[in-house]
Image (cartoon, rainbow, N blue to C red):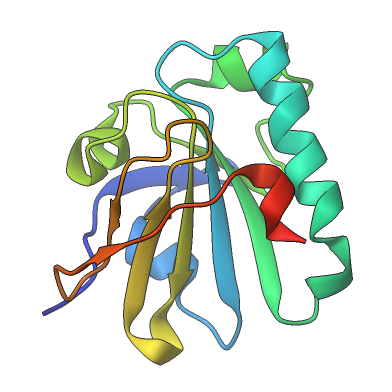
Length: 139
């Protein structure tokens, strides 16, 4: 089984999710949801700050449904931490509509969605259910 893939933009250039998350470190994708508010953007920034001590092993990336929403959150189109999902293909592929955290570690061949607000079970690429955590529990 393999991790889901979809077209997106990062740092202002077109790419695919699997190209973005390929690397020696794990990735934490902070999805803003399809209609993010300034409160969501602030919460995602707080999550990034809470895992700052893990930067050597964990890269944090923000996923917004459009450049306009990302700009409203203070992010520049060419920011290397910004993934723009302009056609919402990432959101659709992963079944994401609301703000959500997705942990990706391709070295361990796992992708796990951590729903930050709902406490619903998440999934991984092996198809088994995993417990979820709140953003405050990431540290």
